[in-house]
Length: 100
Image (cartoon, rainbow, N blue to C red):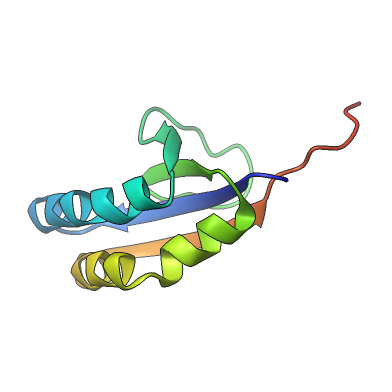
């Protein structure tokens, strides 16, 4: 079964409130087996647009990635984040096929 990923780009307007979002998302992330592969750090936009902060979050499956986002626990965290940030978030299925 292919893993699932959240690919997130976010601009933050109020870091103090955003820290509350980070605290609130820990429970659903733990429940659905999330693992951060990228969390902030240096970035360089070499094509297209970018945002201030980037994250790639791995889940054991695509289904768990989708379930986490729709979970009541994550929706509570999301309500904290939305007023203080602008984000792009896509949920994608991992690829297990042949490589070049």
